[in-house]
Image 1 (cartoon, helix red, strand yellow):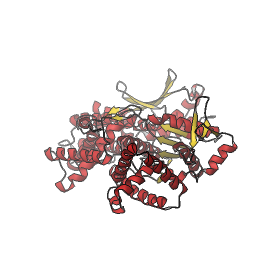
Image 2 (cartoon, helix red, strand yellow; image 1 turned 120 degrees about the horizontal axis):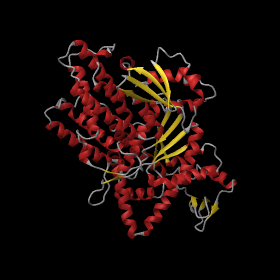
Image 3 (tube, one colour; image 1 turned 120 degrees about the vertical axis):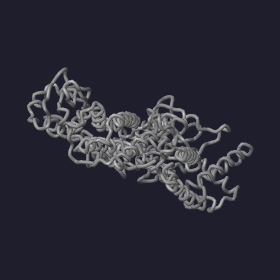
Length: 564
C-alpha cells in the first residue's frame, strides 16, 4: 500500500543506476523496508546498500545526487544503509489519498509465464484433506502471481490412469452401476466400486489379472472400455467443479494422466532409446539408471505406462505449449523422491528448461480419519463447518444476516475457517486438524478475519461520517494511527515476500497483525459522536485499512463478507 513511494524510488533512483539489469533492480526493491520513528515523527524507507544479490556501495553519490525534494524530506546514509525519509503528516496524507482507488500490486519482475499445477485428485478416490491442502496453497500461490502481474495458467492434473482403474471398472460391473447413479454422486460411487473390487481381490488373485488387462485395453484406446471411461471422467469433472466453486477455486485447464498413454508417448520413449538412456531390468521393464543404486522404471513389461512416464510427457508437452518461465507442482512432501527423479530424468534428456520446474512441498494434516480409519470426504468437512457456523450465527445476538441468507453466509464462514487453518501454518509443517481452533472468532482464524472486515463495513454504513477524499493528517495524531499506517504500508513488502518464498503463511500472519491493529484503533479512535472533520478523517483511515484487509483475504482465497 506504500506503492506510490516505492515507485518513486524505483523510477527516479534504481532505474537510473548504470550497469544494473532488470532482475537485479527488482531484487534491490524487494529489500526495501518501511519503519516509523516517533521521536522525529518520520516514516523511513530503509534500503541496505549491499546484499548477496547486489552491491550499491559505489552508487551512493548517484543516489543522493538525485533531485527528490518534492518526494522526500531528506535522504541519509548510515551503516551501509540508505534512508529515504518522509515527515509523518505528509506521509499519512499521501498513503491514505493514494490508496482510495484500490490496492495496487507491488513492483516485481513482471510478465512471467507461470504454470501452477495443484489439487490433482484421483477420480476413483475421495477428495481428501491432502488434496485440499494442495488446492488451498496452490490457489493462493496462483493468486499472488496473478496479482503481481504474471501470466498464470492454473492446471488441475487429474489422476485417471493406472491399474487401479481396472479395479474401478470391475467394481462398477459387479454392482451394475449405471449412468444415473454415476451422475448423482460419481466420486463416492467410483470409490465404493474400487474398495469392493479390492476386497474381492484379496481372496481371488484373478481379479488382479483382470484389472491389469482392463488397463491394457484402456491404453489401447478406441474400444468400449475407453468410451465408458470418457463418460466417467465427464461426470467426475462436473462434481469436482461444484466443490471447487464452493471453496472459490477455478482452473484454466483440466489435464488428465490419460492424455499421456503409452501409445501417445512413443516418441519420447524412442528418443530416450536413441539417447541410450533406457535399459531392461530383470523384470523386463524399461528403466532409466540415475545412479549405481537407483533405476527408475519408465515402461512396464506389458508395455503400459507408469505415473512418472506420464509426468515426463506432461512436462514436455506443457513447455511446448506454454513456454513457461516457471512451473510449480503443489504436492505434499511425501512425493519428493518422485519429483527428484522426474527432474533428474529430464536433465538426462538435455532439456534446457528443467531448472524452471519446482516442487512446492507441504506437510500433512493429522486427525482427519474416522475411528474405523475410513476416509473423510471434503464435502463432509465443508458441510460440518457450515452447520457449526450456522448454529453459532443462530445463537449469537449480534447476527445481522436474515434467516433466508444465513445458509450462504455460514458456508462462506465455514470455508474461510478451513482455508485459514491451513494457510496460517508454514506449508512445510504438518498440523493437527482442530474444529475448535478453525472456527474460533477470538483466535487467529478465518472467522476473525471475516468479523474484522464486516465490522469495518458496518462502520462505513452506520457511523454517520462521510468518506472524504482529502486527508487532514493534523487530525490523526494518536499512536494507534501510526500503528495502523505502518501495517498498511507494509502490505507491499509482505505480498512480495509471500510471492517470492511461495509461502502463504507470511501474508496470513500479517493479516492477523492488521486485524489486531484495527481492533486497537477501533477502541481508541471513535468515529461516531465526533466532530464532522474528525469523524470523517478517522473513517478514511478505517476505510483504507478495510480495503487492505479485503485484498489480502482475496489473495488467500477468501470471499470477504460485509455482514455476518
